[in-house]
Image (cartoon, rainbow, N blue to C red):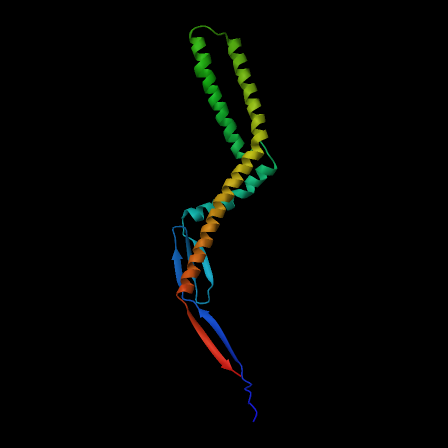
Length: 178
């Protein structure tokens, strides 16, 4: 009069089957295959691709400028040239020319003014060098913000593609009894 026991057990497994999806925004295109694998690529000529390439092309020289400040950096040369051009034009047009037109200045006084301008340029050069590292760091920071914004956009696009693929998937279930 005993009870009989059953020695059977069952296991169940589910394997999601994704559908191929393709999501696109103005910057990236993401494709998800049936296995849930995603590939992401820039849209040719997009802001994402342009930023990515610009950062990769320039980060090395910016890091060098940061680590080794120099007046010979592209940025410092441009700033110094602009300063000199502006200061010389101001001195010539606003001070020396009006005074000489009215015979109110001697050549030695004009020479002294140009020498003073040279001293101002030297002082400005010292300021540039002192601020060079900070300026380089700010540029690196701005570029990395652009870079990571693109990275975040790419990740969001991947997430959207996966959600679309999962949302439209089917599940294959297999049951076995032993």
